[in-house]
Image (tube, rainbow, N blue to C red; front, side, top):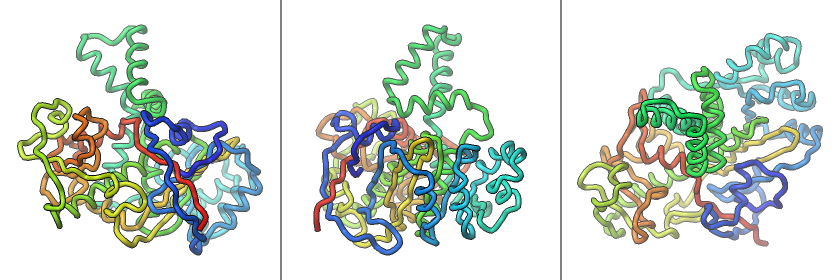
Length: 421
């Protein structure tokens, strides 16, 4: 995460600009400044760059959108469609063919607004399916594509179900719903466990439980990220909802983690003697709850091998693609991720294995990190090749360990600082 002077901030931004080691901060890392390649700003691979909430000029911002690369796609969230959105932004968004992208759940959520805004420039463009608007969903005939989407959408949406889960657990244990006091205690404990970022999603998810649009945010950020990775086109998510920013951050963290897990599995398969391995301990409850089986192993993997934008585990050459998430309310917040097209192999692997990071070990998975599990200090720097406990979800089986990590609020991050060339 590139450092930026802090002002008022989103929950996600406050986390990423933190400087507490106990809350994820791993220090600062310098990288050489470089001229921007044609058509995109320079970012080191697999890094984030972001801002706090900034005052901005709507017309100047609209000019930036209007002058965006011919390849840039703008995925618009439902929250963008209100009377406060500056008219200049709609003009900028609709100034060329297929610049605006509308995903199916957003289109469904827009029905009430469209019915009362038939003469609005954006309303007309969508209702008349004008050339400036592209409607993009999943290929209904591609089971692999559907499986991968199902995995990440459900994984991202898990935090929104945690209040429901906690209430069900309480009722099962005590035989009755919690009283007001017991409910407050449960919520305080949940807040302490998943942190303010996850807790806000959990509270809002509880209120939206049962809604046909429950996964709109998750589908939007997944399809935007997928499109960038698979096409190499610059992608921008536009929203006024800060929850979108949080889901975007969590998705890039998951994809980055799973991508490096897949690459570690490749390296281990090619040269297992390069690594020191250990049998997975049998006397650790956290490990036993996540990984059944008798022949699971832990692999020592030094941080220099797997972390950072210059990690040796990464392919020596990559095709970078920047995916942006811009929150355009009264203030502007940006969070940009430099993905790479080589991550498409991860998306394919998730689909063909029904949810694993690799196919190299049959039914076993490869996990780069053991956090947030409580394991002895000597094992903290180990990866796992192990059979997962998995939960059946339609076309896929969700790893219980992935479910633990998506609710984890202590992701590690660094601040990036440019140096002169």
